[in-house]
Image 1: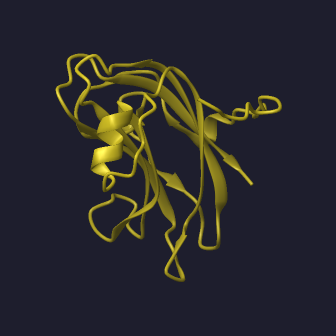
Image 2: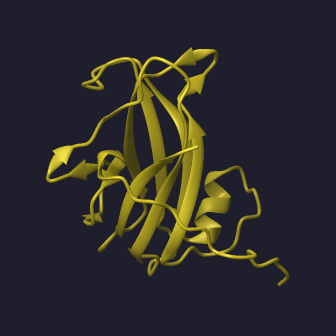
Length: 155
């Protein structure tokens, strides 16, 4: 196997106002929460460019069919009652399961605990989505699930 290691691990300043998810296990499809409440970030009316920093502390892949798709969603509704789009997606879990889910793409590397960075913007098809939230789509035989924290860093 051949790969190129990252030169150095970047650091990010944590801003509590941009916290998307506090620590907590996810074993089924769910919106992200902070202090047990659904977390929605108001990005304002213009273009918002950011990175979602995801620190995974546990990820179950024991059955060999687990897939956790980390989504950044946008909406024009603060309650996410309608007009919801996916702005970015990061599949994590069993590599072969991810490969199969994405059209036999050849992915075969299992994911592990660590830091993942998901860049995104609130613009899609020339529209700005003011409200942002995180969502985890869970698939497979899940016993424990995935545990992570997440926060945004503006570009």
